[in-house]
Image 1 (cartoon, rainbow, N blue to C red):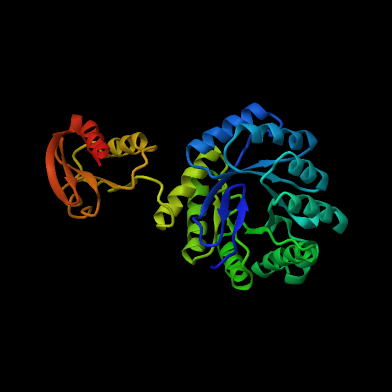
Image 2 (cartoon, rainbow, N blue to C red; image 1 turned 90 degrees about the vertical axis):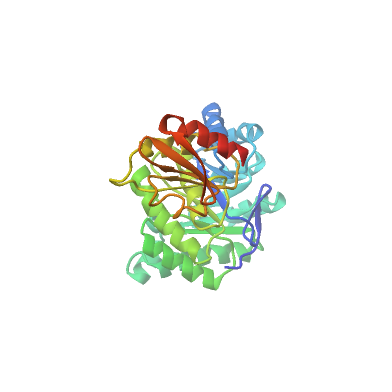
Length: 346
């Protein structure tokens, strides 16, 4: 999909730029200390844009101090009260996420548009299957891809009438196939950058699977400019999952890529613990390499010959190999340390 570029702070979305990983705080935005603490933790694991809920004026006023203490762009999530958007704009927000249809009449929307235009702040139009307009539900007989796309276009046309086009669009559903169809349809009709996600995906386990399938399917079709994985849990996990989805599709390179075998009856070392420990200790290493943790000679250097470095387990020992060539044999108790040393040399 060829989309236009929209800047959120200094981060470009669309226009062929790298797909951006986002998340959303689950702290009370009015609690500046806890919100900033969570944002710093998210920055550390690679979050590139962060969103906060703005339920009332106290939260809107907290934006100024939050912005002062963080480094990544901040997005305000606003519903119903246009005045919250105006205060957030005044306090330095980098993007407003609204549904133009639920913050009042045209004059209120016009005030928001005027404010964001003066400061070059984009608007994300967020359409969700759970909040479709009643007339569209009646027209299409329920939630459909066509209804989601028509809702998004209606809001876009409203902003365009006000000479505003600095827009990002999301068309989310908790249904994977419905989301895929809606994003495919929209991308054929308009060139606004798309924020991709499967809304209300679920818990860490089930939500990760649903998000990987849904977001991955959409991105694999060349659709999407920024993603947010929605999980019922720590938002740090959302960022980790999002990065892995992009890595799996070769859309972004976020350091070390790990491959490991599932283990079987041929495995004679504690490969599961070793693989988890290596991945944990290498989590923050900014190396563009592939590391293989393999259980035996059958799926060792041969199957993983494309890996930059790896191990193949034996009975109480492991073979260290580079690009499929064995370089040394190491006792099992030394494998972790020796492998980490070899990784550091690369």
